[in-house]
Length: 270
Image (cartoon, rainbow, N blue to C red; front, top):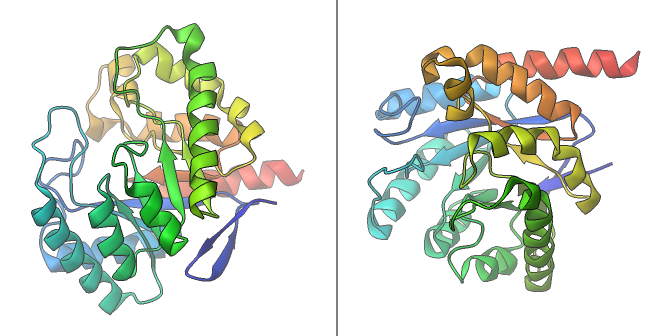
């Protein structure tokens, strides 16, 4: 049975868990600008936890294509402010920080972040050292920043990427590694769906698998709808991901995700 250790708490993954998204940005593709005031931030954390979320994923930098990037100093200040706010009201909450900067990650860990969620796949050369130093769980994302690769090379390329970086992380002292196939990050629409159908391949790595499909353009582009209209598509693709071995879902809609997991768990016991 897989598990992850969060703040000295062993979290079993025999039942999939939910990471609820908290974006403190004005430019996020779905909920940008919704959680700017302290009151709205705390209400969102409360909602995530009450609806069945295990982890709150805090993001202060938008990762949508062509988003304006804030500098490291501003990101540090925002992360510190919001971590202090959340932990003062929810001291037992497990908070993940969505960042690609090692300095921001180190500050956040010292301020109480339980996980580092690095969508860059280790672009900062110091990131692995930082998470290894603190023995902090780390989400390793496959993010293809080069030219799109042929679809028939996708899985083998990703397995090589994960294998090399997992070995490096273990050498640095990281004990809890979660892999994220990186839906939407440097992949074509066809590749995103091909990847979804091949997710079970990554169980060979014997690590928890996280999927972040929630309200992404891979749903909108097929159904010709907006992100606000993509809940049904999100639930559908999350269900498929769970059936293919995913144990952590990163979502905007925690209640609906929790209901999906509950129904699938019942089916699996029959």
